[in-house]
Image (cartoon, rainbow, N blue to C red):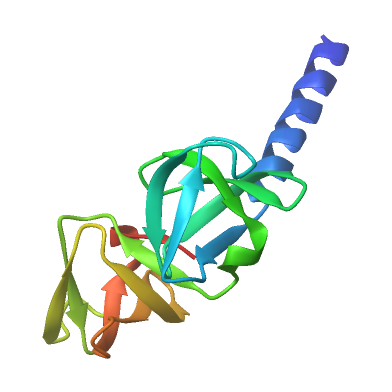
Length: 147
């Protein structure tokens, strides 16, 4: 029994260590970039991604990054075509853009599913973002995916 409980403690600690690691994020740094089926230009383009589109890095092969998006689609992007500029994507059908980080704050505008927004600031449960048209405001964190 002593060995079993020691083993369970070791497994639990290992699981917590992995779960606690921050995920590596990148965003598309060109007007349009191909998400490819493999690590190389000989692989076909699965999607075309626009500037700012956030991705989670799940692997590497040379100068290529294996990535996953907010819909769990995976593919490969060429490392020089991405950056560490913070962006998020709306994962709710509609999200309110608010003046301050509170559900009681006035609504300045709305964003929709799939909209890519520039990440400006973070507060507990909220992200301050900027739309392409320059409008800035706060959106509840659980409605977004990315940084």
